[in-house]
Length: 416
Image (tube, rainbow, N blue to C red; front, side):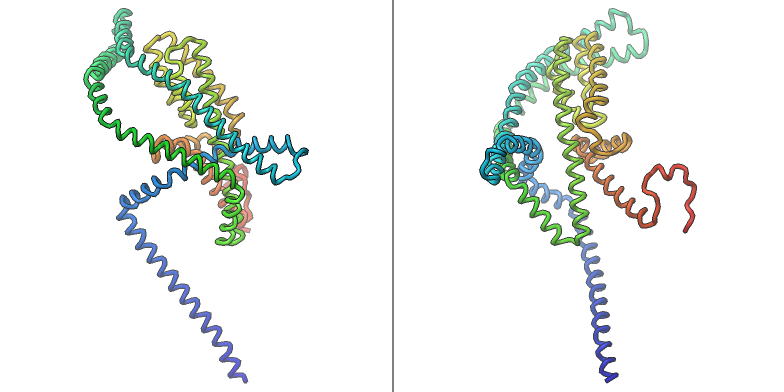
């Protein structure tokens, strides 16, 4: 009997050891396969990038639809809530009221978005064309006038003024030469690509149209898509990890939604205020400068300077006195945006200090250009939040304080 019991005990142990060895061998094999795959992936980086680019091009309407849905969702929700509150007491069926309010919310949001885009295009494009045309026609003359001003005032006694005069003269000659020779050549080249441009335009319009249709489906079934994603997350991950994923997703939505949508609204308001102010001050290139200031204001921290510098040069060349007024106006406008309007709209949506904002803008801009400068801040804010969670858990396990202020005067911590 004792020998039988020993044999019974030995068998499970042997099976456990075999299972452990098998899992170790499988893990080692998968690690080796992953290393080989990474090695060949690095050798084929260009091919992989080209393949991903093709996939991205194919899925571009879907991506546009998801972006449209994300941007329109707050407006749809607001319209939907207004309709539900208005007809809640009169409605016989809550389900029918919810479907009706959802449909009206989507249609209302799309109509409002289309109306705003068409209105802006009708207002901006003709004025932009006029401003750019006037700038091209008058810029050489304005540079010559600046040179004449330096000569008439006899400011060219200093090395700095001589340098400025030389730069202006060379710039005037280059612009006139470009207008006479290169511009005509460029126009001829552009005419030869008209057919390609037309096809590209229609492809873009097709992608946008499909994207709008996709956004309608996504907005109409957003609860269903959300519940399916949650179900898949809990199916593939442990409960603790799934809860963590949902927590990070909610925080990411809070950061991206608050920052991106808030920054767009903030930039639109700044562009409108800039247009009103420049119109009152009777500045040249009013709409062109307002568009430049509004668009570049989307970039955090550096945006005001990116837009103000070329705008100031344009106005200075047209009228030096008005250029000085514009500098004062843009400084006042940016102070209003940075201290009053921006905090009101954005609040502390990212939770980043000024140093990390500058760091994320430079890193994002260096890697991904203009889009990276805009999206770098919320992306880095999410990574900052994740790293903060990881550090807090480590400190909690070691029973150490979580707040950074607690470590200001600490020289060392003794073992318990």
